[in-house]
Length: 468
Image 1: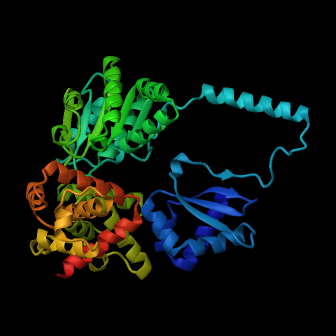
Image 2: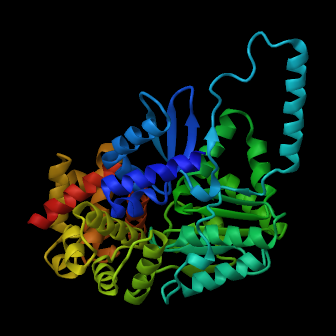
Image 3: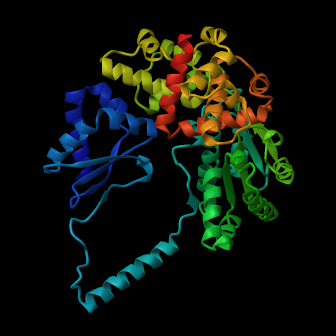
């Protein structure tokens, strides 16, 4: 019934907004939950970009037509990032299942049912944690830039704890490290459904550790990670200068390694170059294989675009794929963002995708010739003006957020908008080493994934810098 409602909405949307809009924005969406009591529908979408776009442009369209289909006078509509493959629609009851006047006999029956369900849940306890099933080896595009990491990842997934333990994947943000980590977990789970597999970002690991200390459940935290067969820790550089967290992770690492359990870690730079990481932890990371993931070459970028276009049902001509690949030089995430932007531009303009349209849609992107005209000085001046700080303050060692965040943004833009090396940027910014620059770039790149306000700030600064 619920799926039929969504199908009916798609038919209406095709007529009202056009086929391009439906194929680009609604095809991958679904009804995730429906509450008759609250008259609220939750729409699940695959990523933050689509969520933001639908919220800004099509939320009223969805609310209006679904209200009619659900026979509601008014309808609340929430857009949520939720994988369609991992979710089923939840229909919340219109009235409470057990009223206050429920008899003791009925309450007892209810308790027995709950107990029975609890027992069933325990017997079917999940063996994977935080894995994204969308990331598979089958949809990872391999090129010379990532061949070593890809081959090692496949080997590890087939031989947990026996080959390349630990496996370290390092490289700048948005190049596919996280994809490979989830692919390892998914492949390992398929090969051995009984293996206990856990993916965790370093940020979440830190938060969970702090919570365990505050709630006096420190040992529970330790036991959780020491019992896994495969631990995938993403972005270990965020453990920098977190002494207690590094201490606990060091002991977890040792225990897992002693038991022959597999450890996979990702980082934004070579282990020795991660500032604030304990030497003994760096030493452990170098026990196995350290594989770098680099920016893909033109051919690989074109292949990635074609694969993403296929996944999003976007008709992408070969010359347009080559054009997009030639102007996006930062990372794969921005490559996909450019493709979605071109598709959205096409849908809104009701035009077929061609090079001319792509050039208009991506006019804000920086190409090679533009980079030649941008200097480090011009970047820092615009950043200082934007945040109402002096150039000296941004270059200073001050750690207050009002200064450190603009500094990180400046470092990010210097790398993105100029040809300067990391060392040159570090020297210009007050003698910082290149690992500090990498950390700042990675942090901003990481925040851009879910922070729409920061994304708008970056775009405004880019436009100001390009006007010079």
